Image 1 (cartoon, rainbow, N blue to C red):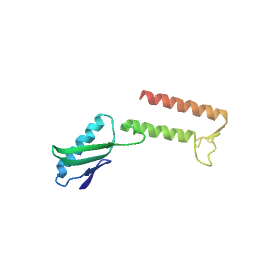
Image 2: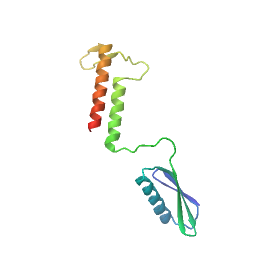
Image 3: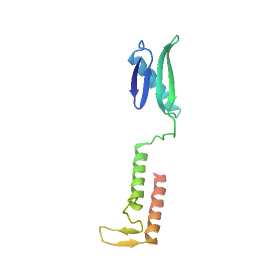
Length: 130
């Protein structure tokens, strides 16, 4: 018995008579087949049987992990950064004040809240078009 890892999928080969190349090919085929069905695997078990090599897969449990493109990942990061900048979560951050470091201007209260909400809404709308 030996174990392999392909990406973040654990592979257990139960029979030492199965070569690494054969095990790797079987595991890659199982992972590829699962990806085509929209499934993410956590474990692949490979063992020998009378009919040849058998493969048993285990799907990841819990919340389904959405796969993103690099563009989607970058947009998600931008969205999180914008929300943090406009609505800071820090302990000492004053959420009712906006200070412009370039000009020294300062805004307070409802004006800040409205501007923040409008900018976040416009960015979220823009994200849908990209």
